[in-house]
Image: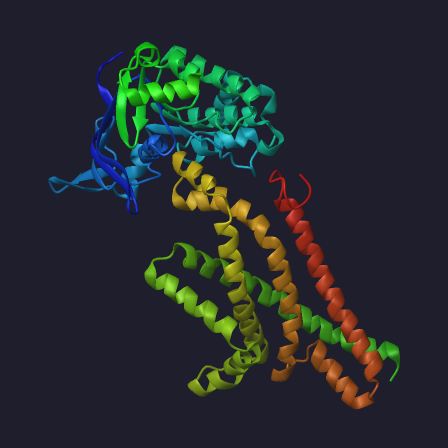
Amino acid sequence: MSSHPIIEFKNVSKRFGDTSIFNDFNFSVKENEIVSIIGPSGSGKSTLLRILMTLEGIDGGYINVNGESLWHMPWNGSYVPASNKHLHKMRDHLGMVFQHFNLFPHMTVKRNITEAPMRVKGLSRSEAEKNAEDLLELVGLADKADSYPNDLSGGQKQRVGIARALAMRPSILLLDEITSALDPELVDEVLDVIRNLAKEQRFTMLLVTHEMYFAREVSDRVCFFDQGRIVEEGAPEDIFTSPKEERTKAFLNAYLN
Amino acid sequence: MEFGEIVSVLLQGAVVTIKIVAMALPLAAAMAFIFGLMRLYGGFPLKQLAVVYIEFFRGTSALIQLYWIYFVLPLFGLSIDAMTAGVIALGLNIGAYGTEVVRGAISSVPKGQFEASVALNFTPSQSLRRIILPQALVGMIPPFGNLAIELVKATSLVSLITIADLTFKAKSLADMTLQVGEIFGVVLLLYFVIAQCLALCFRYLEKRLSKGLGRGGVK
């Protein structure tokens, strides 16, 4: 694993109206690192991913992705807010899987997966469909290519969501509470897919999750978030077996017992 | 006058009515989309322009709009034949209502669909065309169907600017023959049949478009 940071937050601030989510926030992720973000709701975990996916802007500071500024671009020797074109280029590095799947209901599973590679990346139909077949195989849904999302179970939908994000070949995959909307018995089929991806360590993964055992199992590093700050971070073993901060202990106790 | 003759004269009028509907409906749809999208996504001046259009055409009488286009505009040197004036007035009027239908349907597409489009790096226009509009269209069809029927009924206004539509023919026949019962009975039925045909078309469209969406009928 290289030590080059692929994601860097520098003194980032983010507000929603009068509520400050991040203030002078610093955070970094190394290339191919798998980082889990845990913590109570409203602590800014999802906002962190949404800022990276350019779904939310920032109010201050800088973010680098792959060595380039995400929300700013160089112009006449200084940095100015990013243009749509710059954001379009930067999004190429990133993919996201959503809590509520957000599959396109008017397209078959196959088209959900091929549409963006064809329209955005310019892949030919045959290339895109070949990829989609491989990805559906990977997530165990090869027989569902021609189904519509509304005919799938929640777990199946989310596996399509993962395949759709992977089809764009992002170097960073953002997973936003991907099992929170699922019935308990469907959680494992989705986590298994991520487990397999994690084993290969071919890309960077940043996951916000409430599945503590899962976070412990797949992550290189776990960050405990509270009120827009990283209260504690470290190797999963350390965080889960011997947390140092009172706040972390209280949170994990409430979750694991 | 014989009943068969009455029907045949009225059918001539019905053809004119259908012609007006066939021309005003596409105009109304175009106006609805253009101004609906402007209202949603336009910069400040475009948004304001859309609001002015919508409020003006919804807020004033359709008949007076028709009179303006046919009788008043010529005073400013802009002469338009009766048919064109009728189509423009009705198209703009119904289009103003349609604008709100377009806006409402697009706004009701879940936010997650817009977010997924961003995450997959679609450009805004790709996302609108390929992701948002196909879903929004399904929701537009029933209210558009209502507006289409409103349009059919509103076409009777054009009889007041010399167009020999269904209403015009009925009135002149009634003046001539005094057989008001038969005449207006047939007229009622003809308007109803035209409206029902349109309603049927819209129901078919709705079924076609709702494929996979799990609402509005068949999958």
